[in-house]
Length: 156
Image 1 (cartoon, one colour):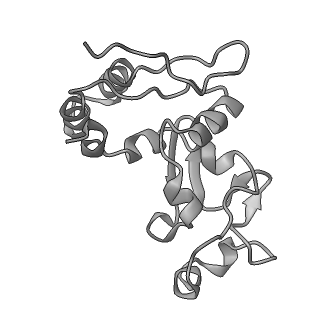
Image 2 (image 1 turned 60 degrees about the horizontal axis):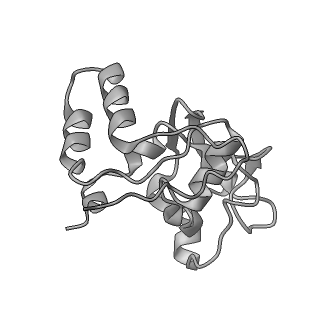
């Protein structure tokens, strides 16, 4: 089984939100059906009906403070572009860089249950945060701005 599939990836997003504040051009509509689009509140759709309304570059459905604690106000009906942006992918790294947040590296093998148990525990945010930082291998962006490639690792 792929270890990343066992991790609830939303934990990374709920303490970030960078992709939702990166560009007013990102929360656009692409392959959504008319029924799916109708489920998004009209007040959150831009004037051209081509995507989400933004305040500056920030999606109007984003709640909370980027890099601290965030949530999507329409998570269940968010556009496809929002569904496909995944923690640690190229788009995520680019958005996190804009806000001075470290890139997310791939999780180490065998950590899915460790992360899941830390989230469900009631031990407190500082323990959870430290555990996640240690387990997923957060690293600061490179000085040359090229932080999209993760270092190679020997699996032997």
